[in-house]
Every structure is written in C-alpha cells, then in structure tokens.
Length: 94
Image (cartoon, rainbow, N blue to C red; front, top):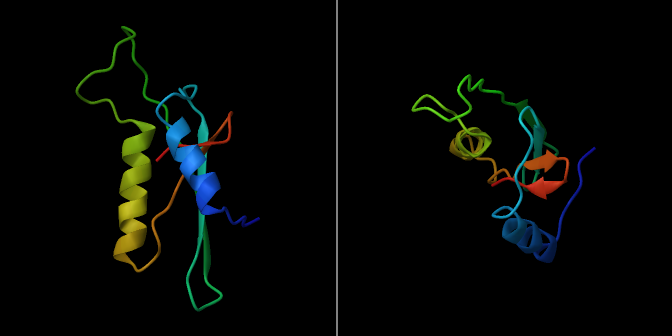
C-alpha cells in the first residue's frame, strides 16, 4: 500500500532519525510515485552485518548507507528521493 505523508510528518520523522536506533535486522521500506504518471515503486531491505567482537569494522555497512545509495539510484532514474522507514518503530531512516 502506498501512503502519502505531509511535509510536517516528514519533518517530524526527520528530526527523530537522530535519536532512534534500529535493531539489527530491522526492515526498512520506502515508496514513491512518479509525478504525472501512474508509476509507483515500493522498495524494502534488511541488512545484517555480523560483528563477532561486537564492534563495527571498516567493512561495516549501515542501513543509512544502503538507504542513501538506493535513493540516489532511484533519483538517477528520475524518481523522487526515497525516504526509508524502519520498523519498529516506524521512523524515517534517511
């Protein structure tokens, strides 16, 4: 299902991204509509990087990095920027 958010909702979610930590293996979702057409896109991903010693390494990939890369790819194809929301809680990642 595609849901639209208001600018106020987006601003509130953006302010919350700095304080929310998502659990390892959380699912992140974004959707977009192409202006002036019926095109719609739904993107989701989960990311888990094992950290045997409990600490991130130089090879660590974060959900934010994945979200920004997918958004940049979508934008390179003419889509609007993608904002990914993680659950739980349903808060914007990027």
